[in-house]
Image (cartoon, rainbow, N blue to C red; front, top):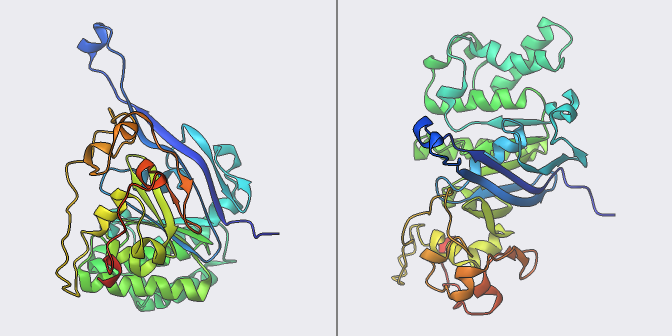
Length: 341
């Protein structure tokens, strides 16, 4: 029998009702609905990194927050090792301990009034991992050293560290509960490029040493290429392509994925023509009919404008939601594209 995935997501969605001003409410205007995430399904095996990529506002971070329980889903199912944790009553301590999150801005996610030692010790105490205060202290010291800091740094406050060091503290706090799955919400986007590389390499080393599973949220395709085993491309609350990282970078199937990959610098300076991403992301409050990408797609036809495509299996373990790809109307993917960058 195949191994049960560590994380399974089925038809996950969250819709937010927008408030209506009092004057317009008196005129009978009904509230509009923002479909931040509108039915995504995926699974992540143990020790694997799945990256979710897309432009700002597409719903990437909302997916992570739904899995973490920070938002209540409108519909769908979240399961860890086959145990449904969607409902609040089912989020037992044992299951919550197995899942943690690293946020985008370490300065905002660390309590400025607490010493670093107390920040890292909080999940250890909350889940009863250590027997006493001395053991908690030893665990905190070990976690600080594991992420490249000194045990003495535990006596300092977050403002005494650089951005990269604060993110190391966030990683140590995430490891404190001994999780299996870490939700990484753009963990390096607020850092300088040189510091980004250090943090990413640290995360990969920790994954190898501890067998961690990552859901990695990012808009930076170069970072995703370095970190991920599989990639899900998201557009307006839905996945449009899911594939192994190497296959997606070598031969992207969806027009949106191809346009995203065109934004990666061509370090090989091949001189080939590039096509920039045209237009703007439509409003999720009033999305286009049919395929949501059709107003920006150079290959759209009448079917694309009227019928919404579903995610269907393509080559190998890939899946794509595109009528043009299904009908063979797309030209071959550019040779030697993003993977060279």
